[in-house]
Length: 226
Image 1 (cartoon, rainbow, N blue to C red):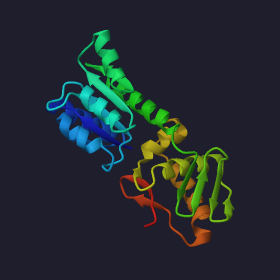
Image 2: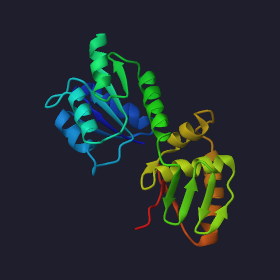
Image 3: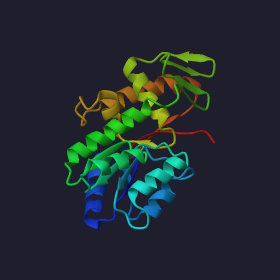
């Protein structure tokens, strides 16, 4: 998953970048509101979540959020702030933020809130996703390659669905465990590799294609046909 972190406190920014990277996120860190606004606009990287500090130089985080919403950006936003007044919280949420976390905060709670925003956002994604002639229908839980139906187990379907939702981007092992197994399985096991081998045998091998690429040390990516 990709996240834009806008934090002008150098030490806190570095801490967030390290913690999020260890959790499997791809992190872009900026230190001012103008940079955050420019990077989050349509045409830039497709972030899964924006983590905005309220008191940013250039443009305050709450202003960045409001302007992004006015520009049609729907990426989930988690606002970080030292402000604790109810009025400030209401102002932040009214600006278009999806969640609000007051400083100082617990890193575990921050991670849980970010994962919740990603899950909530996933519910709004299209039911049918196509990558070339591979079509994944979430509502019918059906997969086809061209005119050929492909029979996947429930777990195989869930893994493939996550990957096609993120087509073109790397999905880490941790992300797959979190979104498919909800963190219940030992992340050191080879269960993902076993399932991916079966998926490849069904969606690629009979058709002479190669859809899922393993990115060494990072995770897995669905290749988007050019």
